[in-house]
Amino acid sequence: MIYFLIPIFNEEQNLNLLSENLRSILSDEQKYFIFADDGSSDGSVEKIHQLFKGLDYTVLGDGTNHGPGHAFNVGFEWILNQSKTDSDIVVTIEADNTSDLNILYPMVCNNRMGFSMVLASVYSQGGGFDKTSFLRKFYSSIANLLLRFIFDIKVQTLSSFYRVYSIVLLKKIKVQHKVIIAERGFLCMIEILIKAIKSDATILEVPMMLNSAQRKGKSKMKVFKTMLSYIRFVLFKSA
Image (cartoon, rainbow, N blue to C red; front, top):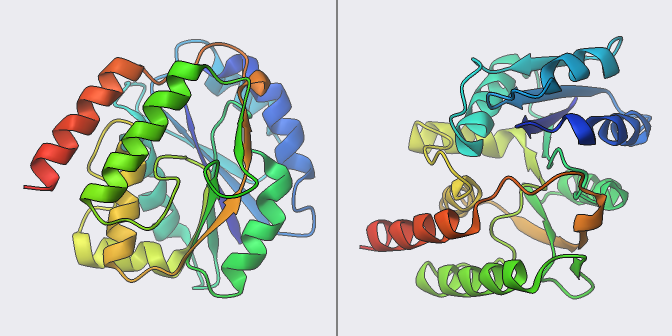
């Protein structure tokens, strides 16, 4: 089984294209879609029920906006409770269609070849940004550089949602750390990456072009708030 874990927060405008893409991708695989709703108020949940009717899917959430880290953690816990075999795979993607699903097949193949975590990487050779503001790219580059240096991380792209995990790795993280993700905000992806490294994950990066033009509406990331949380994370986690 391939579980798709997708955090949702007011993504109604993006769901039609997302549904089309998810229906067509990996057509020979058994897929299950988990939407972790983070308190959407725009009709996203109703749209999901409309678009994914007849498919294997579920919508999680209590109607409150907790942050993407909470949404991911709820989704991971649900998947661990549902998974029946260690060959299961978890794919995490953005709901705003900025995750290039054209590279998902090689990502899944690399996972099955033995890499327990496969990352879509804008910083790997062949990856990059398209239609993304200079300020966003600048902050992202500086944050990645500092975190890689401070925590001695060899991975180039640290915070992207778009990843493939083996279920075995997630189980190992759960056993060793008790909580898969504790961070509520966008730092959640760095947290689980560090935990995966400490759990001896085998990691591979696949280059991806991030095309923000695919997104309808604004990014949910508040850049200044996220930068402050990065500083807090560095001060307390590296101490």
